[in-house]
Image (cartoon, rainbow, N blue to C red; front, side):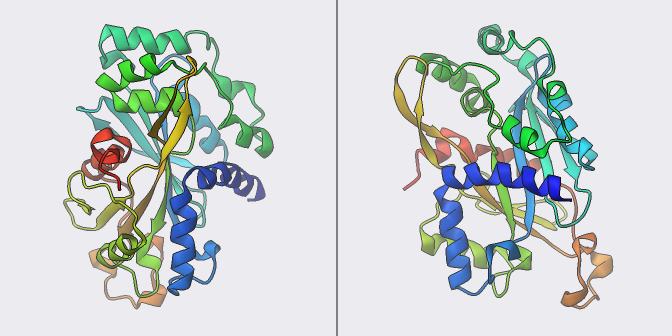
Length: 297
C-alpha cells in the first residue's frame, strides 16, 4: 500500500528531526546488534492528540485512517485528564496501530473553553473533508498545516495551568505525538527491563509517572516512554521558550496464554496481547507534563 507508506513517511520525517533521541536510539540499537537496519524495527503504534470542538477532534481526524483501511476499535476515557480516545487496527500487520485522543473541551473551565474556542471558532467546516484523501502527498501535508494561529506565551501558560494536554495541542497541533518501538521483537533485548537499561546507558530519561514500566492488569502489556524533547517555541507575542514537544514510547506485548506453547519463530502479532490499557496510557500522557520534563537531565 504505497500511499499509506508515503503518509507514514510524511509523519515520521519531521518527527524524527524534532526528536533527536529517535536517531540516537536507532543508531545505538544497530551498534548493539538488536537490528541490522532501521526498517527492522516494528512500530507498535503512533499517537495523535486532538481537541473536542466542532469540526475537529476524533470524528474529523479518524477519517484519514479509516479511508486507508484502519478499523476503529476500543474506546477509552481518562476522567482526571478529561480525555476520550480510540485505537485503530491497521489494514495489515506491517503498519502501526493508531491511537487518537481528544480533549473534552466542554469539561474545562469557562475561561479555558473560551480560550480554545478563540483559536478554533474560525474553523467552520471539517478540514479533512477539504482534502483529497486519495492524494497521499496532500494528506501528508495536512498533518503539518496550521489550522489555527499560534498562541501567545500568556495564553499557552493559562491553558497549561488547567490542562497541559490542551496547551500541548494548541501549540503543537497535529504533530505526531509519539511512535513506539516494539521491544519484544529485538535480539537479546526483548524485555523492557533490558531495553530500559540500554536506554539509561544512552542517557535517555524515562517517564517515571506510575513507575518507569507501566503494566496492564493482565500483565501482558508493558510500556515505557521517554520524557518529551524540549523544543524552542516561538509564540505569537514574540517570546521564545522551551516547551515539551514529542517523545518515544517502548512497548512489550507478551504472548497470550493459549499460544505460549508456540516456538518463538512462529509468533506473530495475532499471538500477542492486543489493544491498549487505559491505566498505562494515562501515565504515558504525562511524558509531556512538566512534572516529568523539568526533571530531565
